[in-house]
Amino acid sequence: MRPVRLSVRTSGFQPEKRGSIPLRDAIVFFHTTGDANAIRLGNHQSCGIVPKNVATVAKIQDEIPMKKNDIIQQLVASANAPLPRATSAHPLLYRDAEIAQLEHERIWTQDWLCVGLAAELKETGDYITFSVGNEPIFTVRDADQVIRSFSNICRHRMMILLEGSGNTNRVVCPYHAWTYALDGQLIGAGHMERTEGFDKSDICLPEVRTEVWNGWIYVTLNQDAPTVRDCLSDLNPIVAAYKLDEYVPVLKEDHIWDTNWKLLAENFMESYHLPTAHKATLGGWLPLDKSGFPDVVNGAFTYQTFEKTDDATYGVAHADNTHLHGVWRKTSVMPTVFPSHMYVLAPDHCWYLSLRPNGTGQVHVRFGVAIAPEVDAALTGLERHKWMSELTHFFDHVNKEDRFVVEGIFAGSGASLAAPGQLSWLEREIHDFQKYLAAKLR
Ligand code: FES
Ligand SMILES: [Fe+2]
Image: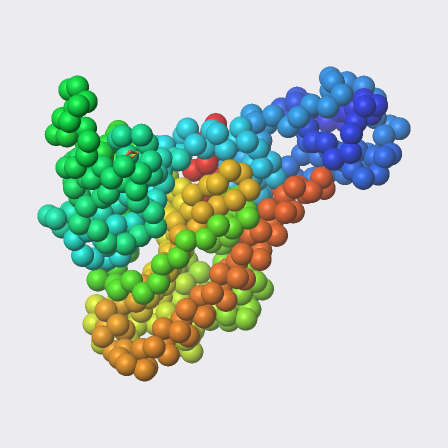
């Protein structure tokens, strides 16, 4: 093929500018470098520095910002390529405000999101707050022991009703004390007797679709979304075998990390970083050649399995566990339910993440840990206290290791010389995630 002469007008370029040039069937990315005499040009697989003095003018008009569609096109190209030819996404997929808006419209207001474990709402009136596509909600166990979710906005003058988590037998607005029952019905509103047409029985907090599946609570704003049960039917036999719905919650925390939500999701999905980033904690227990992946790519979830070494501190079945057999007694399954619910389900414990974006550069992280009932039953007194404190310390350490890398990648993605690189076979789930994202954003 005859080489294409790529023409770029160099005058007027500012430092640290990016853009793209549609060229035949490809998208060529460019950005200026710190070197006033060079421009970096490339596609998603290769790049090079081009001296400015060999570049001439073409269609680029001074500075063309990288377009949302170009970023998505690169994502689609990688998603459609076989894994051996796939690459990481363009850096701007993690930083572009228009992409974030598209995700809001097509992902966060459409898909099922995980609030946490149903066992975290054990008693009548136990509640926890969350948000779905910027919509504050609370999820509560009602008087009939049904887990339901409601808008967390008062129907009087829009005050946020509940914060954090706790237990209550009614929801009282902190502004003027309008009071709602656990089914969302307004049952108290003082000094409204002179207001025409006011009738408490007409007023109820809007309910948000909620479904409990294998012990997880999922919510969605999408009235037409297929049920969780249908979306995850192929995952059910694997998760159900662990009897997760009997696990006992022991830890739940909310954090904000300085990274894009997709970078944290992708970090969870690949084991490639374990021996390096987690060498001080769990890196040595998970031989990478024991990683397993599903045969079929599913649009709603992905997972991998890990067989632990026999000396693993956590992750093997307790002697009183009678429902897991053979290699499954030391195997963990790590599902990601798209877009943002990820967990490690081990024979003795489960830890999970549920993510929500806070703009492009921050992510809300809900982190929780639960332990198998036989592990819970065996722990008493001082031993329990010691075990719990070691477990908490261990996961703090693991989370710090992950936070270091995912905040580092986000910082790296803002550099003018950042560019996509090729993926390893161990990053198979990232490729699955790209397929999900491409289907949503294209
Ligand atoms: S805003 Fe809630 S009672 Fe007024
Ligand atoms: Fe990690």
